[in-house]
Length: 129
Image (cartoon, rainbow, N blue to C red; front, side):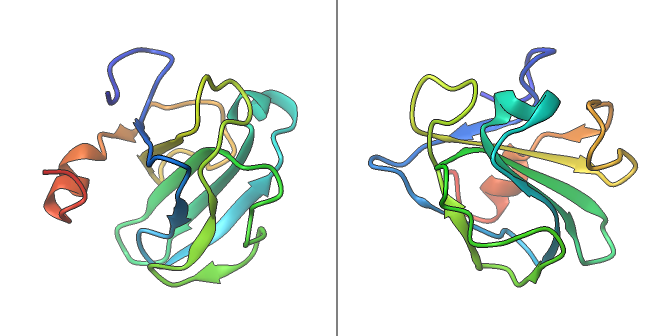
């Protein structure tokens, strides 16, 4: 389910047994943490800004503690492994919470005024049918 409640601003993806999380595009990692401060509900998470001119911000939440393969400041290419989906933070099962916003929202701000529904993009790319 995507973008349907005030508290849930993305889509939850899961593959049996946990899956590698890959960069959806070329991007610069701005945050890669083990869930601290106000984002502790995210568990182990990554926030990244798209390198291309579209200026999107991507968030990946609930990844396996210790699985992060990137750090803040890294620039990665599309398809680069980032870590593994998990169940850290406020999670009830193994999955990846994935959300997209326009870069008009600061990557470290607790606001989601510019969230973009990722489902149509994922369908266009063949991730969903």
